[in-house]
Length: 186
Image 1 (tube, rainbow, N blue to C red):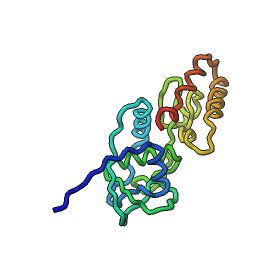
Image 2: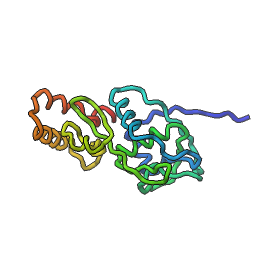
Image 3: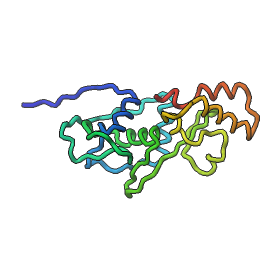
Image 4: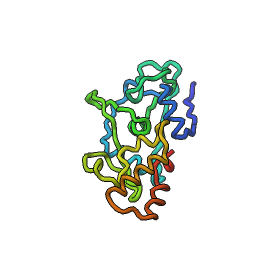
């Protein structure tokens, strides 16, 4: 008689993003396509920012990972050795936004999910035309995790843009420095 063995493994978010990027974590073909609305992705980032639990991921380790496909639309270097059984929507959402990669929707169209953040109100929003015009928002949080990003430069640009629309108090500058999502999510 064989018994099923479950192992608890703690991954940090950076390790998960790297494994997905390489192709080590994939989706079984039987998984449904990405169906979350962008507002639900926004809510996931809001929950993580606030330190709320966002659930577990359940992976299946399979050395013969056939009938799988990649997470995201970017090219992978390896075949998956882990496939996600539970948590696909959350994991795909995180990868898509943090790595600035399009998701494939259930209609097979690619879409890049763009989430904005207002450091002064500590508020996430799905980007639309009004949010893009509102200088109180960083228009796309994906840039915060780019290897080419200088977070201090982004903060300076944000404060400069905000100052072009209204006066910015010293306490607001301090608040903004301490509230960037990259500091709290990863």
